[in-house]
Amino acid sequence: MNAPILWIVLPLGLSAGLFLMNRWRRVAGGIGSAFALLLAAAAWLLPVGKPIQLGIVSFEVQPAWIVFGRRFLLENSDRPFVIVLNLAIAFWFMGSLSLQSRSLLIPLGMAISAMLIAAVMVQPFYYGIFLLFFAAMLSVILFVSERGEVHLGIKRYWIYQSLAMPLLLLAGWYLSGTEANPGEIPGASLIYTLLLVGLALLLSSFPFHNWLPAVAQVVSPYAFSFAVFATFLSFSLFTVAFLRQYTWLSSSAWILLFFSFQGFLLTSIGGIGAIYHRHLGRWMGYALIKEIGLGFLTIGLGLALPDPTSFLAILFMHIFPRGIALALWGLACNLYLEHGESLKIQNLVGVGRRYPIATAAVFLSFLTLVGFPLTAAFPIHLLIWQAWFQNFPPLAFAAIFGSVGVLIGGLRAMAVLVRSDHTKDQGSLESPSQIILLAIGSVLLLLMGIFPSWFLPVLYNLGMTFFKGS
Amino acid sequence: MAAAILGTAMANVSYNLRANPSPSIPLASSTPVPISAVVFRLATAMLIGIFLISGAPLLMSVFNGVRLPQSLAILGLCGFGLLILGFRSSTFSISIGLITFLNAFEILLAVIEPSVMLNGVIAGVVLSIAFVGAYGLTLEGERNRL
Image (cartoon, rainbow over all chains, first blue to last red; front, side):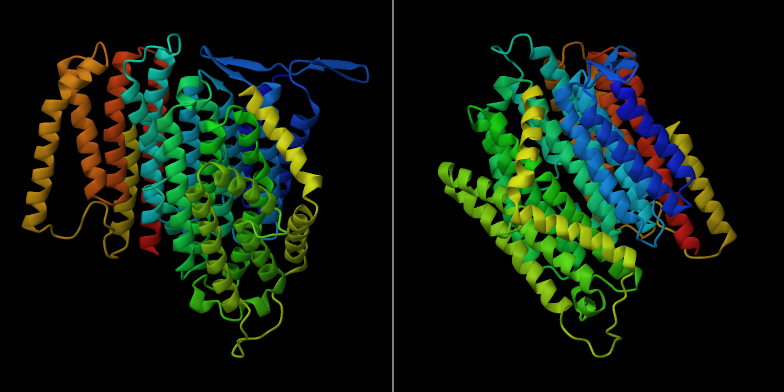
């Protein structure tokens, strides 16, 4: 058995099969989520490169697979990434079972996750940029299929990702040439230029962040939340692993300044935008800009510390609270849309009376995304705020401002959602399956918030394992 | 191949339009362009020309092995690709702009990294852009037809 075949080729093959059976939406969703859970369990239980004894059968999962001279290498340190990504897609696929609308989320989601895993595994490492590009193109297809046209926001995303790829590839190629002699780097300014512009495009940092609210406004919230969560998680982990291959680069003042300054800008822009939003989708777009900014602040400070691994592991701690909050928001907003509601603020009056569980889930996801006390993301936000207060307080203020802005925007939306509207029927429109799924997600978020010591150390250890190996 | 994919999508969209006398979809720009816009575009094209002449020696000094004709082609394709992306917003134009931009990198990488695998993957990248463009065009055509 071969690890790359198990976690890349099999999901890719299955995604083709799921595409063919996508007309039977529930069957495809069931198979997709079961397979993703199986892959996550395999990554959890099967050590790579060691003999495994199952009764009388003994086998070994080989870590490497060579294709045209390039190697896909999955080591034990990569298993945490495979576990969390497969758990995330299983969670999203299960949620999609309760939705009525037809979507390409299941087949494309499976293919996207396989591409993202392959991007982290491939060697030489800069070949991963191609795979990230293909994952981004699959996200574009997902957005276009949801919208039925190539909206301007989708075009921006398409262009930014397409321009990022050659710049990063060139930077990676140049870096691979200087690897042997890091003391004398004649083209350092060229490397910085290519790398920083490429990273700004890839990670949707300022000024390339504007597609997020635009796309969030027009595509299905559930598909949007999945694509953005999976791609940005992988993009940021890939970026950190890429930079840490070159010690002089990861500790460079330019790189640290880039992440810190972009973190400052993105958290501020996200906060301001969320305050003035008039659309629940745009609010999520701005909340995601703030989340990307927070990720930048984590990476910026993590790379500056003498022992970056322990701080960068926070990126892993953030995965489940953020993922569950995004999935709940997406599911609830999709329910509103399926029943003919609009996500414009002025059209949301009284929606909370007709979808009480969905609205409660939306409220909980608001609070989690801003790091409100007693929610799952609060300890993580607190860690980042405290660390920046000790190093450079203005950036900590920016991060708090971003959270406050997103909270104000969320509370504005909630005030409209729960207002009574006597012109419409007040009965609940949620189906039992939707209530169960929303309740499971909400309870998970609440449990993670009330008992953080049950979940966060596990995630932290997964992050430590990943970053120690990268 | 990329041109064939986009061309087939365009042909299908046009066929749909012929079958249904609905208003045409803006595949390129359907609105008349004012004189000032033409002058502005020509001025930008001239700027790219200046950038091409001044940047070619720099590119040759940064990347060993790149000759003047290649350097001019790389910068020209990059510049005009960005020009198309900056001035046109239709799906077809964006596909063409991105493919133009990526062709510049294809030339550069063919010179500095003579790897068949790398060139093959870049060809795959160009095809994927053409495919996304064709998918978008087809959906827009269908939407317009309805």
